[in-house]
Image (tube, rainbow, N blue to C red):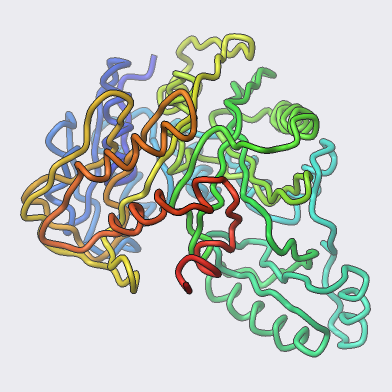
Length: 447
């Protein structure tokens, strides 16, 4: 069995991975940048290696430095977490060719599902419902592009094939906006992803964002851990997530979940993954597949009792794991609030010294975080500080428990979006589960 895992990430997901490794009696190597010397998990790891300066490009995205750290410490496997290199097919391939186990799906699967056009084609072949659109090479002549767009129908959305995280997308309401929007999106995609391939889709105007969590062993077995609703978003970034998604068409859901498992079996998918959908008028529309652990994975864990990070490690490292759908028992409801270091009104990042903090606790409350009193939040990385997760028998009780947890939690010294969560959890539209992906920006923040 593999004995040593290098954790190629930082913050709460690095701490989460380290805890899972300890439970499986695996040695750990924690990498860090020069600006991250005070991370909590560094004190708990068996070995630590600085891989570069504070800039992510020179440290957490520095593939040669990470592979050198793995070689130097005699690591057998590399855990990518989420963000940074987690969905970088080249990184996974270099891990494989250098003799390290990449804890995730194969580089070829990451590459296939990372290309939005290829992913949609594969999804369609597995009978997963997709958004109507045009996925061929866009014509260069203006009149031909307009004909293609007319066939899709307005409003439509232009998307970068290599896009993600809300970048490389632009909505077009009418034909007069089309050509300039294509040029702008192409340039944005080339700058952000090094790939200016675009495709067109019908714009689903007021959907919910629902995703299905899957786990597969790469040998033909695949299960799901149900759904999550991630509709509370700002600029395509999730703020609140919950499981399971409520008020959905159960017949369509059952067919869609089975099609997702068929896709994973067909890909010989190995590890955990999330298949994301827009949901409107009782219909699911495939968006993409994330070939990694998600930030919001704890809500799925809380309603099933299934440890997704340990599953990642076991599957990749050849440790025995049983994946039987009938053994996954769904209980109650779970909600996660992402606590970010940012102004709750302007959303400007707020790095700096945490002079004092107190985590929430009590029955049905989970707190996933790397912060502590005296920790200095660096300005170089994502602003996520903590995830507060509550679980209860019903959604209503879960919301009440979250409000209590938010009342108990505090961070002094920097600004956080804590008060925004308190307002959202008390909002009537959210409490009635009537919000969609446009609600936070389009209604709540503008009122």
